[in-house]
Amino acid sequence: MKTKFNLLYEKVLHTLTEDVPGNSSTTREQSGGFNVGDRVALAGNITSSDWFKNQPSNLQEKIKEVAGSDLNIFVHEVKFSEGNQADLGVPGFTVRLTQELAPGVLDQASQLVVPTKLCEFLAPSSERAQAPIPDSWRGNERVTIKPEPVKLVGEEDNVSPPLPQTMKSDDGTGKLVDGDRSLPEKDTPGQPGGSYTGDYMNMGSRGLGT
Image (cartoon, rainbow, N blue to C red):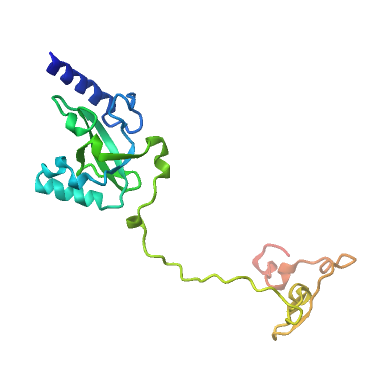
């Protein structure tokens, strides 16, 4: 009867937490202190724990790789396993962990399932946007400009006044002269009468009139 209950409870818990980052309806008290979407870290003593020593060598290498990486780690799944697993921390609970390879991109192909007692809670899923940016994501700095403080203008400095810069124009030889900056007092219309097209097109020769 106990085994059947554990199987049913595990199935329900798995349904509630599977692939719903940060939207699990279970509480931390119901899921061993962790929720899907939590940002966590592997415990510092994970490689010296009895659980680690009982794992196959390839899994041990993967755990060391993840522990030594600066990538953020998130809880992908909280699982309740049947049987007596009190040595895993909170009885029966393990967490499936996945690393964030790029912003919003989780490593689905390589995940770890570890006991809850070998994980350290860092932040809930609601604070995911505040997760630190790993140094491994940062590229080489391409800015070569070295900023310098602004030098104040002193009385002895020969500074060109603004008037020659704005109220004069180049006469074509590189010399600044006074330009035409005033409007005429009366209209200056063009030539009165006539057709300017007559200067370059003889319309009468084509039989179209003058």
